[in-house]
Image (cartoon, rainbow, N blue to C red; front, top):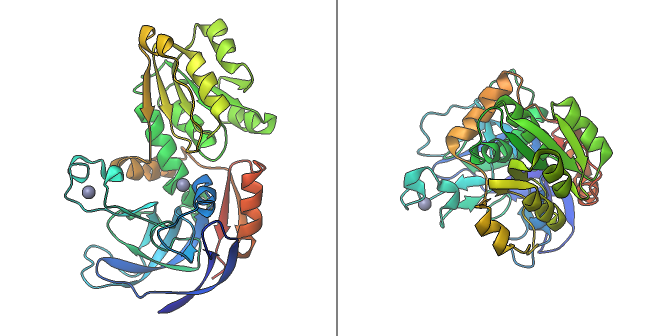
Length: 337
Ligand SMILES: [Zn+2]
Ligand SMILES: [Zn+2]
């Protein structure tokens, strides 16, 4: 067993504390990593609030950048010193219909960092190599960590709209995912409308290339009036109001991509869905190829997150700020060692 300082959820719904915990030595197909930075994701709040957990105590965190310190048995193609990015998807069966068709994220036998195994909000972590991605040395860890979840999900959500250059997309929620989605949508030549309740988040969206920004209230009606609706809407927040407004904003044949997890149970108006030919897509993570694309784009300066860095010891306080919606961009723990 190896001791490491980590942000630990002691029990389901329990408080998160930063303490020294023992993690197992790397097993077959796994590596030991020294973590450089790990972003704080809205999903960490969901995990911390779950009544039932696959394991506890549990180290949180699933968007991390680190360097390999030691290899477990049976690891090929990686060396000590390699710099890597790690995501929520830790390992999958590799054989089911989803794994065989590039949709490993839906594998029923997957394991997940910071959920069904110890995560990355720690100075050290052990992770399978199956879904690791190489990260160039020159890219700063604090900015790269959020790409492993927020960036990956945002880029693949924009791809999921199926839109082509010149079409208009409405992005609801300008948080960790949203402010990256603006950059990715611009990269694809889309015309971006950014929507949020916070004026400071909308200011950031304008700076990143949004053509128009709107307050959340009545955004759907405004978009219908102004443009006759948008070609696609992507909901990057968990707010039920945002889902309702995004649906209203669509023109005929429009696509709605949902990516913000919550317990909301939004109504689906059948008349409009059917008669307007609306497509509703649930969206979760992305393909491994899209994860690699995110880092290629970052190397070209596209999809660079706005981050607020903090020391690991501050994790509980930052989780509280995330819960209250006070963070602009992404909060990232930077390890001291
Ligand atoms: Zn996440
Ligand atoms: Zn599988």
